Length: 336
Image: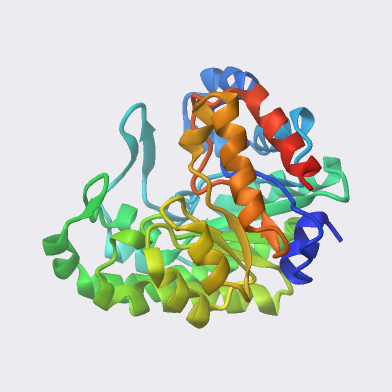
């Protein structure tokens, strides 16, 4: 059993596993080289050899307890026939949602389109130390729907008029997305992934009255599926603040990833029956070593004696110096 799984399932507080969201990617020079030669991001995710190589890059550099497959949450809309492009400084751009195309999808075709992702997991598992976990992931239905239906007004705000206008479509596509997400996870688990993380990156944009239907219930269905597959599952409902508590009570994941707006003291007291992960602001890693170590120590001290995985409250930033991660990992591993 890996250190990560032991912490999540056995709630073992004696060790603190460490890995980072977006550890495979944009801050590493070896990734930047591959990326410069592969401009089409979706094609890069579908290149099983390169995807596996990128997944393993941070493990070659750092003493991490888990690899997370190099992929993207938007592989799901791609697998369902929606065009997905990534434009520099703009992020993902999706073609207009077509309900007829969406409803015509079948699981065999979906699996066929995403087969290279499962191949990448197989290749990675073969090369990965058996004591290290291999994490697969999905975006939660709401977060995917935000992209698929173009619901955002700007970076931190939902278009409430559009949300109202698309309500009937949302009620139709969220259950369907749940089905395809479970299919995608089943194939990732069968290929060798031993842990799942569900990213509900835009959960914080959901109006309170819709949290139950758009966030809690869809996440709960995926969590229940993972538990049926005897695969530990981490949920990351980013931005929902103290609604982490009802989320945890309803969804019942094995582990909760905290975002950096959550007070770690509050989390330790209120979410004490769960394994907890992350929380630290990735911006801290751009500061002086003294400031970085003070914040690392603060999180480790707060969560001492409880099952805790060291990670961040969001993904690593492109400006992060890889050398500082070595020092952070060493500090986590030597913390008494």
